[in-house]
Image: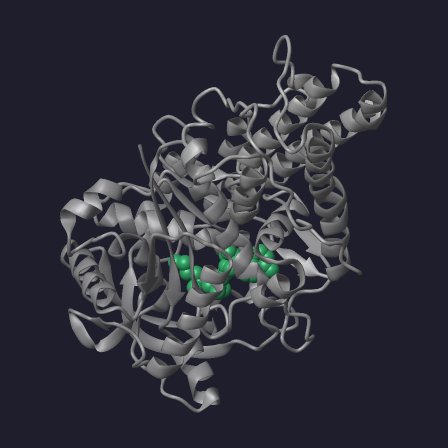
Length: 507
Ligand code: MSP
């Protein structure tokens, strides 16, 4: 089955930070999981490069916008590579293919009468790249950017969003006719509440005073509003207006993933644009929470921005991926801190998982000369890890932190099994059941390696090799999640003791 999922395309006015990494790692974990289920995954991310905000950032860096975009876009690409992110494509809104396809899409809207000329005057926040209403302001400022919005008045083109109000309510509220699912449910209710309470206003889709954007094909004096340009990345990247066959193969999108800050654009403006163009709607839009650092919003002025490389330097790639998704439930807001990340690393990874692998392999070496002992009479490893929950259900809800705590539970139980059976005593007493205990522990470790694989791919591979396996773990795990979740230890195979998997880290 095909599975097309996207992250937002990130603005290049800023270098990548842990907030962008959070969404991108989550999308990567899901992509890896889906691939292991045998799906034909297309995972898209990229950069959003037009508009006033980027122009201003380039100006203050003293370079041309195009050059500035090249530089920061490259930083995003590198960050994702260094975090083992396996996106299938990286789209840039300055790509020629994207620009041409956006022009085609807008022409279609214009020709169908969905776009009309009008005059607009309002309060515009450059940080948000949108008009704000008086009651959005706090002390006269944009609540997110703490800046006074500028009064902006111009004649430009408007998308007739108000024509879609009832249709949007219908498709979002009715789970049967409604092809657009918004998750989590609270977010869906929020959007529906807003749609029911206020009359939708038409949205301006062009700017006359901004050159750094895509020219409207039907009015060359204007450029496309950056949000309209940006949302279209989801269709242009897979061939809209260029390779219709490829496009039809992946559209509609299975999942748009993002934080709640940009949910309105994705669940109101975007579906309406698609309806106007006669295209099918995305199936699911999931908005995760926003997080703060030590209780505060991340900002350059506060100096608390965490960059992906800072995380990698401290914890390594795989542990960084694990940690960001483990601290709080994916749909909720949360707070993170270096201390919380370090504590979680030491508890879950150094003490629990690292210890299980290292103790087990040491004992296999010591008591069985490093070969996996036989198990007699029957296979009973589940007594070690407890029942393995069907984590596919948790993946369906994108419940990443629950998946991880579930894996930790299994690791914890396996460690307790070591304590309660005391293999060192069994060895002293020549107890023949010692081989069963160690076989079962290897069995548990193999399962845990499969389960942790989408989160920690390199770690899973090295654990795999430690328990005597050869070849890529992905190949053996293919189908693991979609079939019966089976793994069998290779009796008689040599194990390999790893260097410390997770050395303890000082706070
Ligand atoms: N360019 C637009 C998106 C266009 S999509 C068609 C944009 N870019 S952004 O660079 O500001 O990225 C916003 C996204 O970054 C959020 O939706 C979320 O995915 C991620 N996050 C940024 N900061 C974050 C937190 N502090 N917490 C959680 N997610 C964060 O908006």
